[in-house]
Length: 175
Image (tube, rainbow, N blue to C red; front, side, top):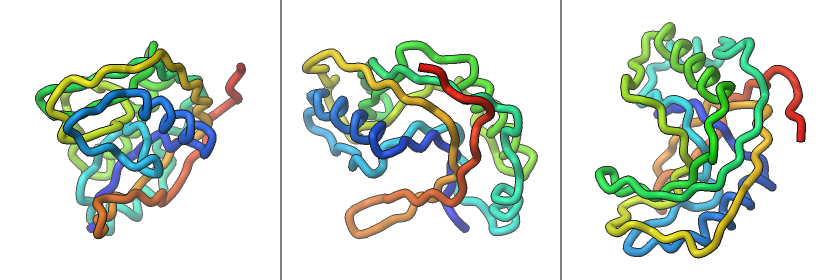
């Protein structure tokens, strides 16, 4: 079984910008996420049996989902999960439509889907004991033109992620 999730997977320039923004958040007493692992989860699937993996890889989970822009400019922390995060200033309808489509695809493949409300964010640190402070204002403009099915693999220095497949979104993103 593979541990999988659907995500917005940033291009190199966006990933660098997210890493710079994360570096300006004062995370005390926590473990920062490596820049290579920065992403925005759409739907966590968990351990997926081989047959369901094949169905997901062969399918078109969001055939009519449109490209969009995310302006990431918020930083915060969830005390209960001890996660520090970056989040979009506004949540485009296209993001929620994409998230709903991939959740429906997971459900159709027989995979459980989380029932709690979707809170889009980029995790920047885990095991954070105190609320972080943003040391300066930031804004990362993310042109979202595709999404990915990603596998979480455990290594000697923690988890690392590998993109298994990407799907393009319809249309183009304007500036």
